[in-house]
Image (cartoon, rainbow, N blue to C red; front, side, top):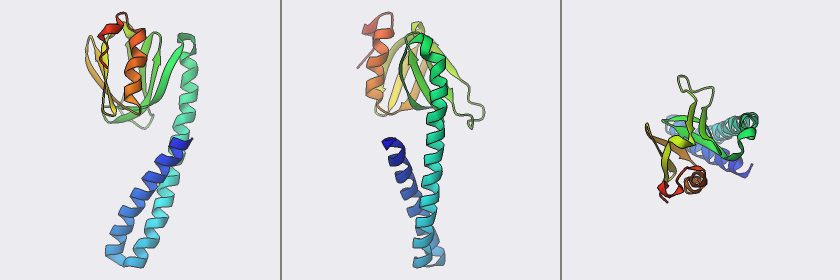
Length: 158
């Protein structure tokens, strides 16, 4: 919940500053300040609502993975599309948000993963069919979580 509030506040503040500056140049300082605050609050609340919805949706998705022993899950982007990443003892699954038109669910059996490495905020997952890069919070915790599930844990770079 803390991360939702933090993300919503940051998004609202940045959006409010940008819109306030723009409106201030067009309509004067007082109009810019007022519109910036109003737009920042509205945008922040919209972001909070979206994040809460996604977290609740992830809760329903988690049930699908209970039989496979869910190891880890978190919000993640793949190729610019937002979604949720799940790691079970059998596979790595990314499910896109419904608003991502054209984005498809990605399932990678753990036997197809040859390595995983954090790369800043990104997680590079090397598979037999190529590289998949996820933008995920705490990427440095994901690679070690994947390692024990691989047939040969030594292939995971830290």
